[in-house]
Figure 1: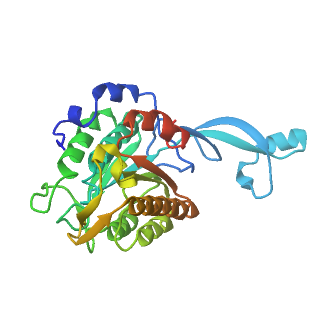
Figure 2 (figure 1 turned 135 degrees about the horizontal axis):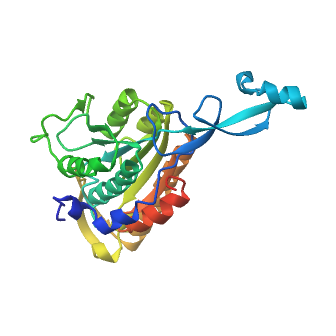
Figure 3 (figure 1 turned 90 degrees about the vertical axis):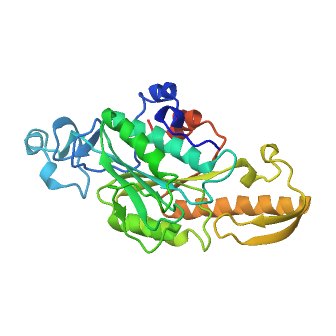
Length: 322
């Protein structure tokens, strides 16, 4: 795989132009510290009155229009239009297992993060990036929140310089959040403990975690404030080893774990391949169930998918974009 070195190599400028009409969405409504382009209906303190609705038990009495009550002898709540500020946190798993597959999963994640970050920036939302799991680097590396189209180049440079960086060449001036290790669960614990504000978090990972992903996602979901999307990126050959792009896998082979380096001698047959497919299906289904039970959105993404179609169609239908 040839790693991109420029923004144009990371993502096609013509695609970026087609993303200009999109904006972020969230299944939750959050008040913001700064004003973005998004406007949402809320009861109470805001910038512009919009409408009335009937009072229902439990509504805040401060927002009853008593003048209307005096005229009609009925209770109405005032509805306002308010500017809503939305933060987008893009979290990229850059572990050894992600930097593998055909097409490469980490490259796919980097391009998708660039596309989503671009949408957030041009719509004046706050955008931050977190990268973890890089071989030889404990903890996580972060690009602090920024906003505005003029930050697009900065976003691209950070992804290009940090996604494939190793322990011996960390960029000076980039803040590292401390953590006990660079593993999946430790990193998500650090993110949950140190992140601030509210908004949308997009986690880009293969979720192939020795010892399980559960503790990390549990910790993340327990820290309120973020609408979380877990995009599970797998290469076609990981979903089905018989995929023609990866060549035929059969006979006596020695398989090596890309992260631990441990190897195993196996004899690959059609029956073994079918059992593998079934285990992958079950693994992905269990991850989806675990996410759904914690109000997270899970979506399995193949690394050979069109990012443009994924962004312009699939993620719009899943509610992340509008």
